[in-house]
Amino acid sequence: MESKSLMQQYAEMKLTETMSFIAEKRRDRLSAARVTWNKLAKDKPLTAAVATQVLMANQDCVAFLPKEKLSEEICEAVLEMSPLSISFIPEEMRTEQMSYTA
Image 1 (cartoon, rainbow, N blue to C red):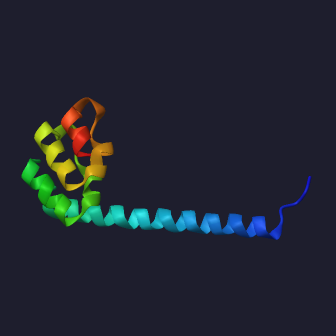
Image 2 (image 1 turned 90 degrees about the horizontal axis):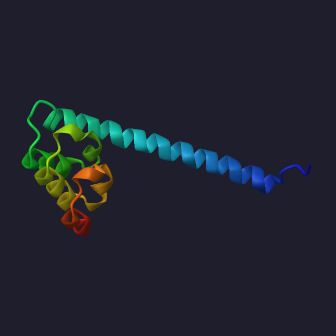
Image 3 (image 1 turned 180 degrees about the vertical axis):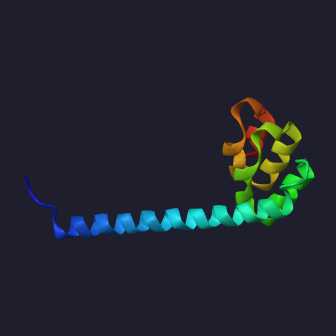
């Protein structure tokens, strides 16, 4: 069996470093989103207005929207703010209009 070249070893080391960096930044973003969510929405009833306010402050907050409290109106407001958030909308709640919006 041939040993890895120095170039391959270096590439693997850099890939590992990069993946670690990305994971750390993602944790930082989600931590910031959690703080925003707790500050702006934690104790309020979830409405389209509240969802919009929170997403205007930090679009990563979409990860904290309670799925059991989503309504079509809230989903549409979320998608208008952040079309990529469609992945956080449960399949059974998606409408054809939501797909076009996203």
